[in-house]
Image: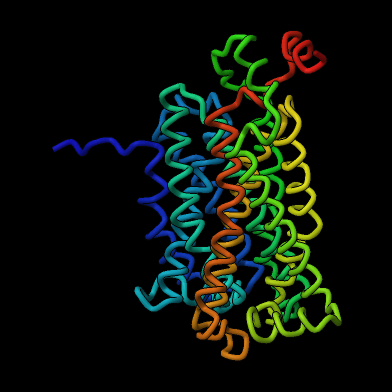
Length: 373
């Protein structure tokens, strides 16, 4: 009996489990350098297998190949997270212990969950869109921000945190996660936008409204102002600001920021130096019309902050975090509320930009004339 063909997009999922067994067995016998070479060879072999299975039909878009390989690693990450939390066993335990022990931290487990669930779902959706010749630009920009935030915090935390002395050659397997998203991001931004069918008169009418005439935008500006203030405050906290409020916050509300693993401190500094300026620019883009850059970048930062807040929240409450750095039970609700609202702001901004894009379109002659009247 002839077996049904395996779709190229799902082949990495079916291959990940037996490969995880193989990596686990190889790690028990090999040194770290051999482990790194094994990983490289497995990825190269995966490309060849997927090309053979799909017949090369989808490889006209090079990002399809990227999504196939990364979907394989997403399933492997999900296996790691489930194994570290005790739901399964015997797959990647030796590899994690010998090759990448920092994945056993609460932060490592959380990013593996996010990669194995959210990123994997995005890969499947984008591969399906490629197969159907549909646009996946918006999904791709959300994924780009999410993956870049995940890998930058992870790599910098490993380099400056308590696991810096435990780094092995297998750590270099994470470097493609920096280079590939940069290349993919360039290609995503170069893809044509799906422009809405709006008349110049409608665009001019929308762009002629002041902020007080747009109550939803006014509420969003207020939320972004509060989010920006909270970003600045937590940045000062991890920079050891001597103010009493900072001292009280880091010891009584978010002691996880003191965890020597380094990830929370890196996360707050990225918020301070990169996300805070974006919040300020977003407020500018909501006040003045014609900021055509805002819809794209709102998607990138929405993905980045969603991933970051999921990892930060989960790590603060996870049992793998040492007890002195876990969030105290008496402040759980305030901690959850502030961090969920922090993650919600960028998502609402991206939704607003996609749902009603007229305000952000390049200014038309009609809208310029209306503003000068």
